[in-house]
Length: 154
Length: 72
Image (cartoon, rainbow over the protein chains, first blue to last red):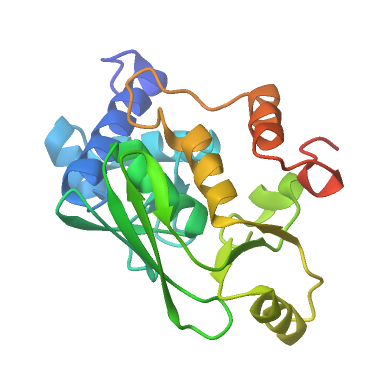
């Protein structure tokens, strides 16, 4: 691997900034091929950097193909937790991350999420840095110490 | 973590999965948690919270007790 930009730590930092900025600016989490092209690196180099970031719990990789599942709070796929903000649609992997999107962006947002039980759509609104409208309750099924046993089910 | 219409819906969801109820938060607590966790995420000098910082955040949001213990 190239040693430019300070080895794996330097490259990982460069990848982190690119991935999160792209996700924030476009609503789409860039995958390795796009990141490699943008940073003029090989896809293998980018995948190594992503593994490094995932090991540090900076983002979450999909279990099979090594693509990014979530650059938290931004989810790479339609998760059902929709966040309308900044004139775009974003996705969070859970209600915590969905609330984290307007925080990270510093923008107003309307969050639509299904009831975990019946699936009925529910809505929350963030305006001027405050949660101004909400409904329902949030449930954590897993105790905090075990969140990272399976971060997809907490 | 999921959003539910009510505590009744939480209990029905848990029952269907043979799970015990975990912990409930108000949406406002979830908002405060998200604020503490994600406010710096896009900044170049962002770093993960330390264990102590995470514990302090949970405490600030009113999340205390064994369920929220981050240590062994």
